[in-house]
Length: 80
Image (cartoon, rainbow, N blue to C red; front, side, top):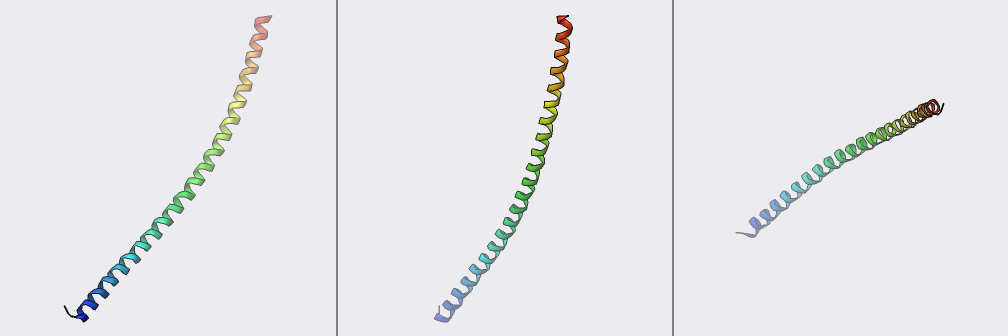
């Protein structure tokens, strides 16, 4: 193999490696963007769930209060 052919092979090899690197960087950027979007959606879902938990806790507190009031009234009936 002549020096010119070796140089062309080396250049071709370098071009191939650069093309693969560009494709890899492009794919990684797309994956990163998808991950960022997924994380944002997960944060929104977590915020909605946190709000729902607060609402359910408030409802539970109200129900507990009403039940305690009813139990108190039943106790008053039994004591009479």
